[in-house]
Length: 218
Figure 1 (cartoon, rainbow, N blue to C red):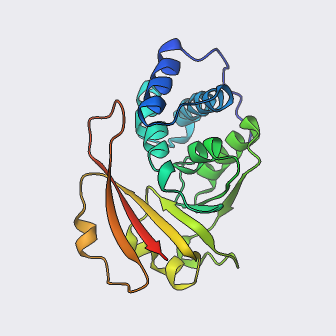
Figure 2 (figure 1 turned 90 degrees about the vertical axis):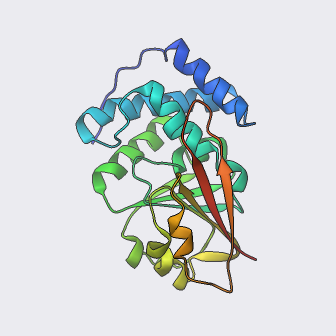
């Protein structure tokens, strides 16, 4: 289904906030990436009114909470094939794919309405390195593996079917994006094949704790 959003120029304050935030992350944007990220926010804000894709309503708040939050994990990507589990509105997969055109991204979610939005973004932004997958994590068997598996929405316990069925390449990385609560770490089962590190993330313009759980299979 195509939803035609208004296409006014991005407000100057949004463009400046994105530029400043990306620079603070050490990821200055070229013109194409900057334009695509702002277009993504415009589409997300417009579709959100009808599809309730995210609890964040204001485009100004989407810059740090969605775009910069997603880009903060970019330095931890590994290899060429990236699976975004529970992508929802395309996060973090779409912002990462915009800045990493040489990597290929698979964005998985079980909800058709969210993937409908993601497919529209892919179409309008001309992203050739992104595919969508409508499936449940527990039953997803693509017949291939991925060098990086990333998620903002999936708990480690729900990731077990993915790991048990060989979806993570070796070597490979699992990146689980978390907030302040790291109690999940104490409940993680010991896995001799995976090593865990906890990386603090600082998101520009966001006064909230963020962490990244990095599991490595080397």
